[in-house]
Image (cartoon, rainbow, N blue to C red):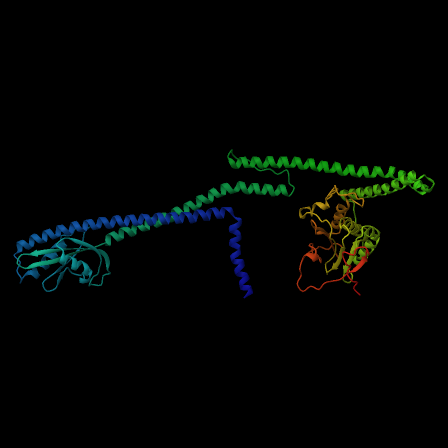
Length: 547
């Protein structure tokens, strides 16, 4: 049953996808349906008008022919000397003679109500005369006409027609109703020919209009498709491709505009690439050139720092500040050199099998002094081990950046660190409950030198390159580094790495959105270990230790 449903969905889905994706198909189909509708309505109106005209002409001719035949029959009755004994034979003779006088285009049959029974021409049935017409003719002395169905006694099929009724006056014998039956055989044949001609013409016009629509759609869509292919080639990096310009119409101007856009885009990209190369070369050159004077300044600073006890308090404080700022400067220089290696493609991995839980614990312990100063408790939530083939130095740097940033922005609130693994990947999520950031800034936080709030006083020195370097380290492993944040709700950074070197990630063991904001039905609450416990943080109780 499921297989049949799947086949049905595929069978229905293919035409729908073709309809959605093909503009010429929609144009041709719309033209075809519109042509069929217009031609059908036009043909229907034409046939109605033609039928009305033919029937009106036939009706008028039938009345005229009947009046002439009645006048002739009435004169013959006056001249024949009708008596009650011969009235039937006289009426029969009149009927036969009247029928024979009918023209080739106005053939008709005659039925006369005689004194004993109806007198009629051969083959026609008495039922051909409607009873209503018989009654009206009896009551009214004038010519009447009505539609009827003429039937025959010899087995011929019944045909529509008109029945014309009047009365004949036989001197000395009374009044006798006479009825003329005019078949519409010729008129029906004419309308059938006209209908066949209309249908044939409509089909031919529909085919021709559809072909014309296909040709027009091809002429219009071909340049649009060329523009689409050109845009796709530009998006793929083939900036030298250009569209062929034919003519001077709107489509030709579209091609000219596309070519101009491609030229301008190529120029802008070339300028940006050149600026990027200059910037990267500048950063690399400056970083390397600063190492030599930094080494000299570092040696002099260390000598002053070691001898600071012999200085007066002002000079002693200056030596300490100089040492501190040199440390910050050296950290910035190291970050710039690392960025230069990534830009030059010289960064490589030194892979070994590492337990992410133990590595995270070590990073947190190294940052414990900073967390204590910031009055920020840190809680680790992990189940078992999470081993992976990674570069210990680079992943340590990523985790240190995430933890330090969380401490800096948590504003003294608890930090939760989650470590989980599955068969394909390991993940570490650092969740703080601090200031957070706008959802639109989730990608900007990884830009170089980007800060969420440059006016906010920072307690930890930083170059603005930490998250950018962390992203490069994650990419070098073939992993992901994602950010989530909301103002006032804190932020969460998630690092996902493949367990084997060169593995391809499909999904992460941890969600991007913090679990404390997502209600998971049936999921037990996992308690963690307090790696950094702050006694002063009484506003937020620490989770109990899991045995």
